[in-house]
Image 1 (cartoon, rainbow, N blue to C red):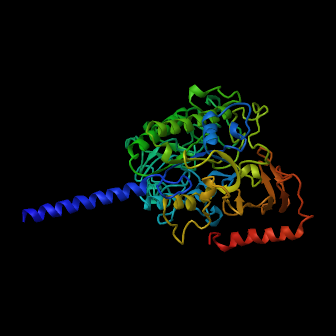
Image 2 (image 1 turned 90 degrees about the horizontal axis):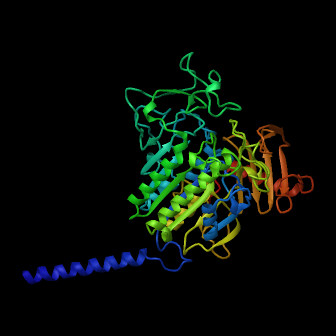
Image 3 (image 1 turned 135 degrees about the horizontal axis):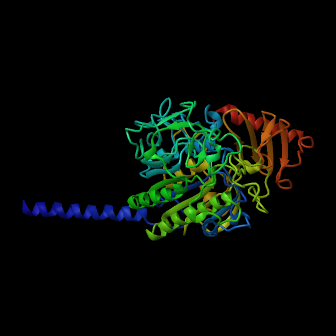
Length: 523
């Protein structure tokens, strides 16, 4: 009997050694051109309102962004990298779900009390990667709503990120020009005192409630339009709130909090594959950077916010280096939409612009379907796997679902991620890799204006027959419903050639209508 037990023990040890050997073989890097042999960690850094020309590796000359430039020097810098919409909520919706936001009503800029726009059971990039064994977190700006009908600010804030695939969240729940100025950690408002409940609403809670109109002389940053309701930290916001004073943050500390939270989470989850969505609030209004960044750009608060954003990128890259994780981590840098200058506050964004061109050579910015609204910086970095270079292939944030699923060695659900294409080969910079054949761009919400880019052609369809911010000034301009531009000779979309190419225009009109009406574009 003793010999029998000894024999069984030896067999078990042998099987364990073989299994360990197999695991080691499967998880070790092999051919740098063969993704899938090892699940990479993934960090997506999404800037806010950052334009194509807003960083030095994309042509900015008035200041430098050394950490973003480092990513570009060590990875692929895309000249045709896009977000899918020219405002934040629809881009974030489509990035996470892999589905164009115009397919879902209510995905315009979310109000402070918006319910969760991505419902439980909806496949997301987080749920797909979590199903493949990843730890998942979102840290930063959310702006996709919380709760069933509206947020329960003094209770459990769900559904939210944890119900759609994230293991952890540390959030600014809306956007910082909207109330409330509190953090949400997982399902609760952080540091909320039950004796001082938080109330958020659309109407003035009392006649004597201070606002940017009634107490304008007390503001540390004056408003130019619209942002003139509840005051916090010397800045008036969109919407009203009271209470929750112990939970309120200082605007200047946002980036520091998010970097610290991200570092801690990465360290805690470094032994398993992880996915971190780092959702920066820079360069969105109100542009209130930490004191150590004030005046660093020479372009006022907007430029200083870009410098602060670059610091955040550097902190994340340094953390990967310190933990020896860089060689197995894909870092993606992108933006949720193009630039805007005066977006509600008097912060010298226009007055101090100088020679800086936030949208680079492109027309338009935030709120528009011209190229400046959705063509933004997009960089991928994975040392040893992605070669340094510049790619002209067309890729989009909506493709992260399919592409990251491929890299993680898992499948997309047939009924989800309806417009996400696998362009992982292009993201990895493989020779001969192809990006998208075409892309639909939208402005805000489910019924608005659209653009369709295929090859060098761009069709504009302004259903509203007007545009906004086409010259980086928040004025409305009348527009013909259809325009056609040849981007190879007219990147600024100034010369409408639709009359010279009627057959091509008709084909593109039909293609755009088909993508919108068919309900999905992924086969």
